[in-house]
Length: 152
Image (cartoon, rainbow, N blue to C red; front, side, top):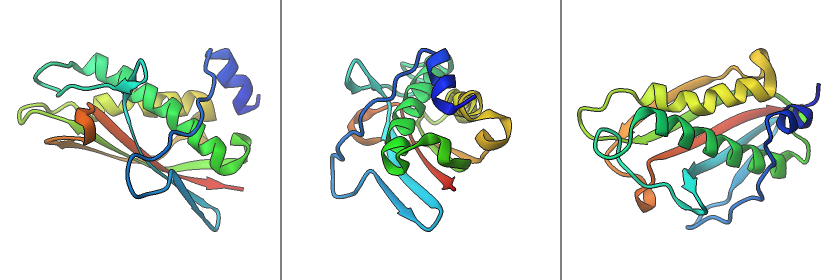
């Protein structure tokens, strides 16, 4: 089954690439690797704001991370022209806007990781990962995620 068939089954349509809000590009391809810049969580077209441990919980965070994963797939599609060319996701890095006592960054980030496994399968979708708690993310967003993918 192709990646696009899987996305269709999940009811996901790929969004267009968001234009950067600062001095960077959405992705860089070098050799067989694509580095996708960090994408912030968005809800209803606006930054999905909040801080974990203050006004947002882990379950809502998983939804935010999943939404980011969909945006990342749109950018990855623009970078490669065809998501079926992805041979594997290599690395995911997640920044979670966290109060000092919040320790479930890894669970928030599962929202993205689980979607990638659904879309690409267990082997191609499995990736190395880091999930960090940070004091703030641009525009007050609750989560930001970037990724590195290998392309055939």
